[in-house]
Each structure stands twice: as structure tokens, then as C-alpha cells.
Length: 180
Length: 208
Image 1 (cartoon, rainbow over the protein chains, first blue to last red):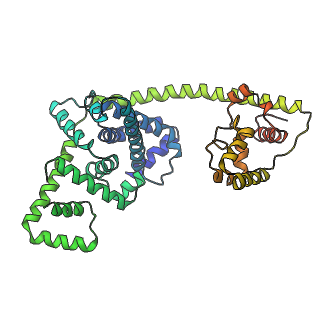
Image 2: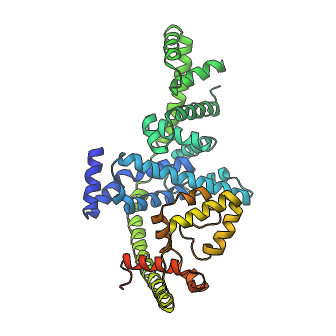
Image 3: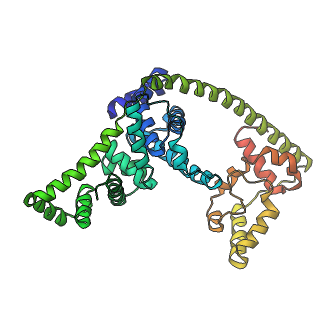
């Protein structure tokens, strides 16, 4: 995967715009779903996905392959999502609605199937109950199946700290799922 | 019961140390109840993973690239405008500086950054941060701000540790609007004018 990414980036930097399209096709779903799980609504996840892809277009020339491309992409997506969550918290101070409520009533344009919609709503309700750091590591470990070392590169946190956060996350999640 | 759950979850989170891990795995082999409990917790988490694999609408992802491309093109156009604005702003700065310099009939002097830093160090050690702020306000704050080098909130230690090149570079970054509004000639010293002029020449913004 890293080799293929390297070729795509090299090709894009050589002026092949089609290579960027391939990068988008390869990573757009990962970016969207990571942002969506972090934030819990379609509209903002869509905006973050677009922002991340635009950042990618502009900054790929600075990418030195010191880490893998997907680590870098997850890192940008995570950082943007967390920034969004922080802004939402500030916004929350000035409105009567909680961000959790605002997120859950937002329109959903990406999941059409009613059953899937319900599943997603259930999942998002659980994820939004986790503190952001726990949510981030839970999503990356449980859904993206990344190792602690990979998550450490993405988040810049120590592996020990990530393990502790993951423990508290799964403890809370299993409580919410009724596994006392 | 909850303690047992915690140990299982710590095992799943890889939070047990090597000794605890071996002991737990031994207990797991010996106790079907414990093994069952662990399976329950694991399947809860796996179930959530399955829920998370919701199929997204393919149309959304097909349409994403054209939307990105459109935004990239829009940004490119606006960057071009901004770049031209920057060039114009720099030209205005260069022009003002040139006028200031020629008004002073060639009485230029060279700013000694080490002395400047030394005098600031003295102020910090003798008078403290508030005195430094007053000093900076009086001398620089009105027109140097773009890199926060001379900001009110500047950490005194940070400033003293700046290199001369950092300070030099900051001279070229001040906002042209501030200069135009406040009139740089009212604030600038001969030494500073000389330094700015040299930078302009070095960076080939203006030819001698």
C-alpha cells in the first residue's frame, strides 16, 4: 500500500492530476467515515472530508514519506474533527441545545437505507458519549483496526496513554451496550 | 464481577503487564465462565464494529471529487488575487521606505541587534515584563506585529533568544495597512530604516 501511495504521490507531483483523483478515490471513504464517527453528523463530516482533501492537494508537495500516507491523512482528519468538536463546544455555550442533540437531528444524505440509518444513529449515540480522546482511539482501534503504534503516529500520543484511553472507552461502551 | 470485567477489558486493551497477562491467560484456560464472559464482551465490541460498517450512498462519493475539484479551482483563482495584492502591498512598502530614506539625506546607521537584545535583557532583569511591554509599545508595537515577535504578549525569554535573522526577517512582514495608516516615517529610526532598506535590496524587491 505504501509503495502504491508513493507512486501516486510522485506521479501527482510530476503534474499528473489523475494521480490525485486516484488518491481521492482510495481514501475518501476512510476520511469521511472517520470524520463522521468522530463528529456524529453528515453535514460537518462532509465539510471536513472536503477540507482534508483540499489540504491534501495543497500540501502533498511537502509530504516527505516519513510516515505513511494513510497515517498522515488520518492525522489531518482527526485534528480537523477535534478542532470542529472544540468549536462546537464553544458554540454550545451560546445556545440552549447540546452538540449531541444538534448532531443527532442533522440531515443525513449519505445513508439511504432505513435500517442502516437506525444502526448508524445507535452507533453515533454511543460514540458521542465518549470523551473525545477516548472516542478517537476507540474509532481508530476498533473500527479501523489500527495498531497502537499506528495510532500513536496519528495522534502524537504515547502508546501507554492510548491503551489507558482505549480501556476506558471500551469500559464505557460495554456499559452503554448493557454489559455490566 | 466488575473487577473481573475490568481485568478482561484491560487484557483486551493490552494494559496488563507481562506477568498479569500470563496469569490471566492461565485463568482463561481453566475457567469456562471467565472465557464465556470474555467472549460476551468481545462480541459486544465486534457487534458495534459491524454496525459501523454501514454502506454509504455511492452517489455521494462519486460526486465528491468534482466538488473538491471545483473548490480547488476557486481557491486557485482567489490565491492569484491575493498574491497580486501581496505584490502590490510590498511595492507600496518599498516605495514608502524609499521615500523615507531619501528624505533623510543618507544619514543611515546600522542597527545592532545584539545591543538591542542586551538592552531588553537589562529591562527584563531590572524592571520586569511590564516595563518591557511599555518599551516595546513605545518603540515597535505600532508597526511590527505579523510574526508576533514584538507582540504585547511576547514572552520575554523568547524574545531574548531570537536570532538576529529572526528580527531582520520580521521587518519585511509588517502589515502595509498599518504602515500606511500610521506613517512609518513617524516611528522609524535611522538604524531601522537602514536595516529595512538593506533587506529590500537583499531580497531584490528594489534595486539600488
